[in-house]
Length: 244
Length: 303
Image (cartoon, rainbow over all chains, first blue to last red; front, top):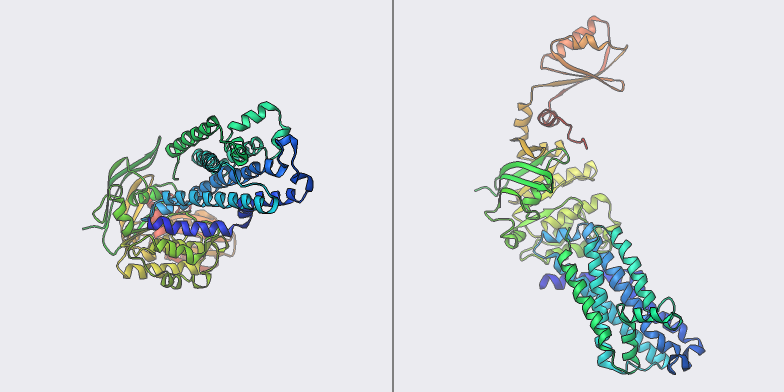
């Protein structure tokens, strides 16, 4: 436990020192929100989105940027780099366990995701009048399950890939799929209906986040799929993970 | 009681046998070297000693403990420096040492280690900004930061310049003088000759010789090597016909002749008889290099 805390302290510092990663995971969604928010038509209620302004409708998709970047792109890349460079192996020769480093990476990633989400929700509320998530419990559950599903997928990539290059070869398409179905590249109302339906069930489950943000409880089926992905991918990752 | 005891160690990776049959013992306070060409099974042997790999056969005991079963207790007492084991790019030297020190119950002082390894002015430098030699010294420091009773060092001075290499040797001698037993993997003969009390030469997964460096050298056939330049082209047969001469080679403008102890007289008088003037004559005695070639059939730096 002592070693874990020390490792977590250092991993947090290393994360904060890595400015490009920090900006992508924590800063980018809020930055895009601010840019969009300065366009007046984006702030006006729009019948296309049940009378909400576009910034409200699009906010959950902005959250997907952080979740996808931190969970399925950066996490597996960092872990496979640590493995490839023998960082995990060196730890295995000390009283600290390489599992402590893996856990610390998960905690740091989760921390970045939560900070980014809080920042986005607050800036949306304070600067652009987007209401705080109305169904607070539903939003928290949808957010945590969606995050868990993506982190588990990220761990699975790290487990399956033998090298950092292989990890990136898997992570980047996965990252792009998550972004696409999360409505980041094209807002979802522009997508055909069947793609929107697929997106409902693609982690992190942007529809569940949108439902809870705007007031209704997320659909149980959406949440159940996220839980299922988290458990299956997480278990597979734990079984397949190689320390060297 | 020996500090490290390896008996009939056997290790396979799928079909490939990495270690056939290795037995050796390392006594307390010794610097013990494992020498061998690449792929001989040196690293696999020390990885089994360090508890990183499970042997397929034979036994390993370190400080009277089993490296797998008693892994937790041994990790406190054994420091390991692995080949090609790096650190995150952005970690700083001082941070890394303090982090690793925090894992141990009774660590060495990171400040003192930085002084001893010449890393003092790199304290705040990021790992990726370090030179190869500095990374290597940091790696050694991390192996020693737990105040180990046994240090396992794999390719200790690879990538270091000659001065840094000598400094590292002095440091390792100092560590041994502090009572630490050292198991060293190397393919530098000079390193083994200078540092090791005893050496196991491993080839193709087996121990082919185990003795002090001096004993290994004297056990190899007594040989001399002559190096010189000649004024006119030399017909090799002049020399190969001499009973004392074993080989004649040309290396650039140099002629290299090997043979028995009485060779010098025979060679110089033969050349004189044919009015061949010899320049830059040098006589070299057998070294551990020669012993190694004789034992394994390869040069130590053959890759």
